[in-house]
Length: 262
Image (tube, rainbow, N blue to C red):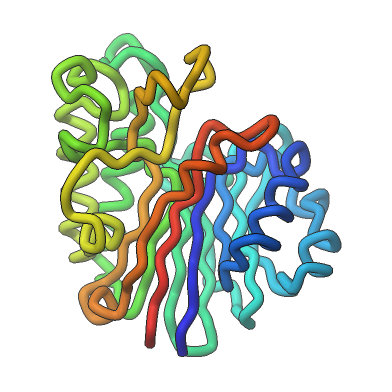
């Protein structure tokens, strides 16, 4: 069974349903995982997506914030969701395909602006969220699984436009990178994107604050596709669709793709 999967922080699925439809029509991933849907589940425009062949969905949502959804052309069943760090946020949902592959869709907290949990509660929540993710994957070692989403951390030096200048900026601080690494190690996860594209600068997010995001190119790789070792070698053709960041009224994230031959 071969399939292509994409992950995309859409920054409001209702506001940008036209962009989701455009991606579905032009790129046709078999499975599309969205984060920051900012919508109750019942208000996600599923009928629009069903008309394009995405007849299956599992999701968690809330009004105006967070929210994760897995839209699929392939049959899938929900296998649960976790509220790590007990935040009461819709930040995780998991589903299983008919071939037995489990897909985890995550939206890790951004962590605010100050990388100090003593003065910034949101940063502490982010670290706690990652710690509980780590502990979960230690307790239940995943098999035949894919983890995707906006993990809100750019771990490698070449995942940001300037390693030196971002060392004290939330999303690239050493403590965040350490926490993400521990989470990855706990599940023995393989970074599929970097398996396929091992060298060079690689970004999936560019700030709205830049007057010309493309020319400035001050990006970060915040969006990830991981797989467990038993299926990681079946992954290929990873890519980030940078051009999507330039669509009209875009999300500040670009979708990340990977294909699997299983």
